[in-house]
Length: 321
Image (cartoon, rainbow, N blue to C red; front, side, top):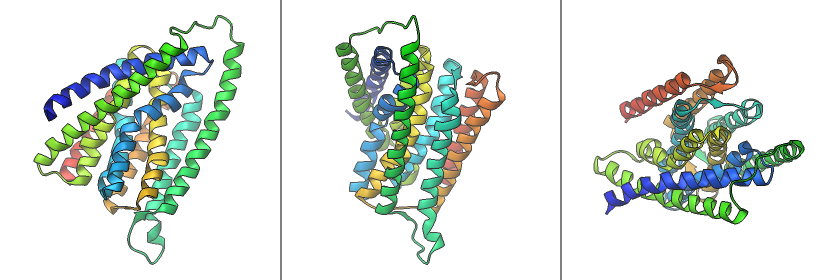
C-alpha cells in the first residue's frame, strides 16, 4: 500500500499543480492582480502546506532535526532544483521587484534565522536553539513581509487597471476557485503520500533524522513547488513559477519555522550552519545568474548549472552522513 500511495501521490501532484496554476492565473486576470503577486501569496502558501504539516507534526512529536532540516533542505531545493528545472523548461524572466526586493528579503530571512539560532554563542549558554521568543520575532518579520506584499499589490492593481486590451479571464470565479481548491487538495495529499512513502523507504536503510529531513523529506515536501513551477513555466506563466519559489522560501523561514518554534523550542545542531551557508550561496548564485545574463532572466544553461550544484550538495550530504 505504501508503494501504491507513493505512485498515486505523484499523479495527484501533477494534476494538482495543473489545476492550481490554471485557477490562480485566471484569478489574477479577473481581479487585476499580477501573476507575480499570486505566485508570492496564494500559490506559495498552498505549495508550502506540506512543509507546514511536516514541521508542526515534527514539533509536537519532538523531532527538531526533522523540522529544521526540512525547511533548510526545502529552501535549497526550491532555488537550485526547482528554479533550475523550470529554467530548463523555459527561460525565466526575473522582475525588478523580485530581484531587488523579494530575493534580498529571503536572504535577510535566512541570515535572521542563522543569527537567532546561534545567538547563544554570544552568551554563557552553550545550547543552540530557536526559542519561542525567536519564533515570535520570525512571525513579526513575516507580518512585515505581508504588509510589503499588500503595498506592491495596490500599486500593481492600479497599473493593471489602466492598461487597455486586458485579456479576458479563462474561467468564471467559481470555476477558478474550484480549480485552486482541487489543486491544493491534490498537492496536499500527493505530497503527504510521497513523503510518507519516501521516509519509510529511507528508514529501512537506517538513515539519520536530519539527513532524511534535508534530503528525502525536503525534496518530498518541495514536490508541490516543483510541479507547480514546472507546469507554470511550461504554460508560460513564468511569474507564477518564480514567485512561487521565492514566496515559499520566505513562508518556510518566517511563517513555518516561527510557528514550529512557538509550539516547541527547536534545538539547533551547529552542523546545520553549513546548510544556512548553502541557502545564502544559492541565493547569491541566483542573483549572479540574473545579473550576468542578457536581460533579467535565468536561461537554460544557468538552470542546468543550478541542478548540477544541487546534485553536488546532495552528494556532500551523503558524505556528511
